[in-house]
Length: 163
Image 1 (spheres, rainbow, N blue to C red):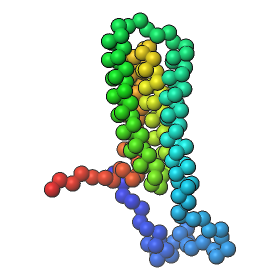
Image 2: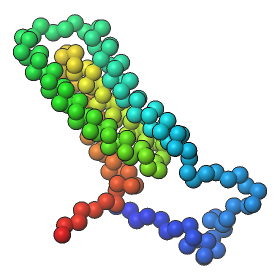
Image 3: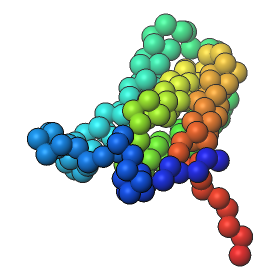
Image 4: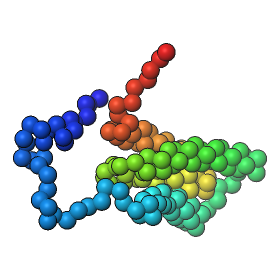
């Protein structure tokens, strides 16, 4: 787990020209974007997986014939998909929380791609065709989220403290 870089003030005190104050006529960029901009970006990023799940569900239901199964088995499998959906909603809530903090756009899109994969797999699973493949894609998305979070600078330096 890497150490955080030293503050810019430290470089300025040492006279590093790369970290000198910008000229007075340079355009100023706000460090605090408007709250509306943040909410809009978070909403767009979090709707992407939901749209992926809806598209996968529509394609699955339209193109794949429903398998012939006993009604009790279908109810059981659908309830298992709903439980996986609750797990995905929990993961989406954590990603939504993370999107509220400063974050590189590449890292944000990695989070969203993993969520979209899980959401699309849920749509596929609901159609009950090729269930093992859908389950593997669902778990691949969630494991991908864990791997992305492991590379996230905000979460990488979190250590467990036992008292």
